[in-house]
Image (cartoon, rainbow, N blue to C red):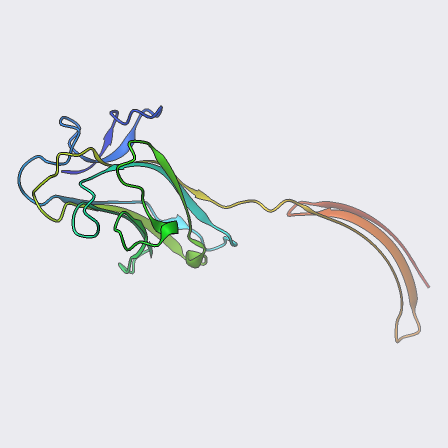
Length: 193
């Protein structure tokens, strides 16, 4: 077994990434341990600002034996370091916000903060490991619509008035109003003596 594109996802999308056999719709091709990794391309977060999230839809059905068997994880790394951090998993010790729901019979959506990777190229890994060769006739791990979410901050608006005197004997006053963002617009008036 390995990750592959499948049309058997049954959730309204044409394809999904799937760990298992597209023919049998499970991850039990034999009585051996099965595991695999799907790695994203490098994601450029060098110029990003917080918050940055990843989101994806997933379907997970395993034997649900806690931390011991059929482990699905979503990991991230600074590209090229091979030092992965588990962002989400179906193991029982996963924090509630990082828990992948197993055995619900429904597609779920996960949204995970990856702001700690700002300033770097990041890669995301999807992994699945049966750990053993027993009780593997379940649907497995499907993932679709993985994307990076970088919310755009709405343009700021502001108005202001001011007067001032300078140390070189100058005086000035002004009024202004504007909207700002990259490419914002604004207007202002001023007079000085």
